[in-house]
Length: 313
Image 1: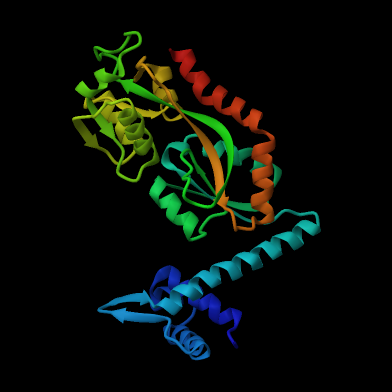
Image 2 (image 1 turned 120 degrees about the horizontal axis):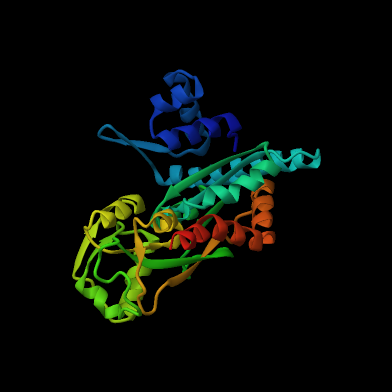
């Protein structure tokens, strides 16, 4: 096959934008130049890579296969470049991490110390819900993903780093505030604010309540933990969130933790990647750093977040 890296680069750019025009703009090329590269690539392969349906551009089956191959090829080339620079005594390259929404409150602190140690590594942190994290893992879009509920039906390597306590919260004036060992059945009588379908925290909550025979009858779906916190403070209902995400509100008294039987729900934050993925030198160095300094990470999070909540209690 006579494909060139240039043709594959153009193809990869088109698949990211799903537009010849936007790919041309991104690569500082003319649209005819992009079209010529794609046409030559299709001639080498002997199959069409794109098809137009109406005004939309879609990948053909051959295009989907080539897209996956491009991901492998460019990932290997990037890893090679990082490995060569590492041999020169310099850690460079990129580190792409995705995390679920409730981890965004402490995930940047995990990157901070590594960044100070390896300032030449370009890091990015994508925050999204659990369903999107799983999609990104399947599509090999990140080096590592941070989540609290690792699926059993995917071939993933998992590295636990920190407990994730999920707690029931209420506004300060709620009748349940201050009560001891509230029966979990009492939650069924309350209005609850929940994350969207696909959220890992929502799945954890629903599984826990279902396992304890509790069915919520009045729920309101809100799009983020920040919105839910504001909703609870406004008296719209109770909720269950990661203690990491409400530490500041607990410390200032804006929210109160309820003493509910069988709470908190304990999950474990884990970094994961696909079993078949070969980690880049930067990703491996970061993972080694976090796992090796697991106790330091735990102390950092507890002191910075959970400790603040205890001070305000």
